[in-house]
Image (cartoon, rainbow, N blue to C red; front, side, top):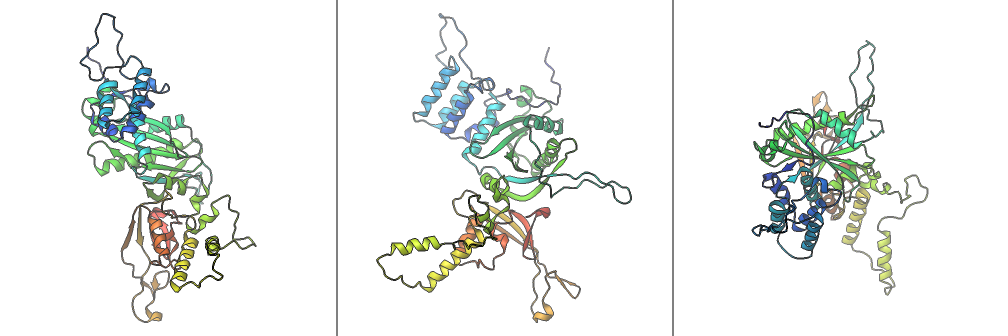
Amino acid sequence: MSRISVPITAPLPSSLRVNPSSTTVTKILSRLSRASLISVALDWLDEDNLSLATPYLRPDQDDNEEEDDGDFYPPASSPEELREEYLSLQNRKGSKRDVLDRITTGDWRHGVSLYQLAIADLQYLYDHPTSQKWSAYNIVPLKAPREDDDGEVQPLEADKTSLTIPRFHPSLFLKSLQAQILPDIKAHYNLDRHKTLPLLILRIFVIDSPYNTPLSLSSNGNMDTGSKTILIAFPDGSPNIFISKPTSTGPTGASESKSLGALLAEGIPKALSLPRQRVTLQSTSLTTRNLEGLLDRRGATRGNAAGGGWSIYADEKVKESPLSTVLPSPPLSDAAEEEEQGNGDKKRRERPTVEERVNKRAKLVAQARFGDTARVGDGKGVERVDLVMEDPFEIGGDDDADRMDIEGEDDGEEAFRPNVRLTFHGNHVFAGIRQLVECGVIDGEKMPGWMTGEEGVTIGAVRNGRIRGHKGFGL
């Protein structure tokens, strides 16, 4: 009698195996380098992970029974023997294809578990930190409902002044999040501590099937055409979370990715909420592929609200304060003293040229406007900034008659506001702007503050010289 699969609400178990010839398995593993494949295989063979990543081993045989000599990758007799084999692969040269074939057609020919795929997928994130596009969200508590003068209960509002950080319990959060997932899809969850950054990463692997059996992963192509992956990062001690853009193994529409993102945006605050302590997610208008830069602006450090020139106060070791009665040493003064000491043979330093004075002035202005941020090679850059200019423009004519005031009104007439959109694109947008200031291309004294990145947003609108983040968010 054939087995009957019944839809249930439980998540996909980590021990569930996937056919190694699946497109999903091939895509995840083939992205890794040879060294990373060997490292992942050794992680699978670790004693703590062996129960969820058991390899194909040689079955018990009698002494008179001969082994199959036709097997290109003979199975090992124990995990320890297989671990020694992969350690030997690290010490000799070879191709990535050989290691990949050994994994899929040899040592794990009977299937690769979902836990193994999660480890391999996160290893690719560690090897390529800019492979995912992250968006930062602020966890904001909701105010308690209140009644107005007419006795009507007002809807819940976000309490932006609260500094309360909700407590995060991984097991309780996953149980609550699973309750928010639709019953016609199944998800696999895997939590992993980032190797170098202070955050916890949750990987969610979703397939379009109501079943959590091996048949659901191989029968109708759910694994290869209907699977999507999304990552959620939880920084330590920060009221923010980072959500990646959903990725798919097969062709998918933009609406499907947006629907999954919207589903998680609604389910995550419900999973984080506690009785009488409800929270919501608010977009910070900060999107980037640089996870380290995102953590610097929305992590638990003092720099998350001290961008641009204010970054000099973010360092706890620096005791300088604008209220101090002792004047600090001016920027670049130490470098000037070293240069003078290096020219000790000269009794008198030559008077700088006009060009040298202009260059020094530009560097001083850049140091004052950007502080210790926006430096090439600091690893904290953003690659794209999208802005909409909403400032009113002046119309030619007499200054007193035709000039629009700052509120955009002139004798009852609306100000001229053309639809102007700006996009800055590069490896490190604000570092590039800083270089332009140091070179004198941009006037650093008249430059608006949002060009230094001090507002901490990458999507917003500029009005009256100040940036307003998308949906009103901004420092």
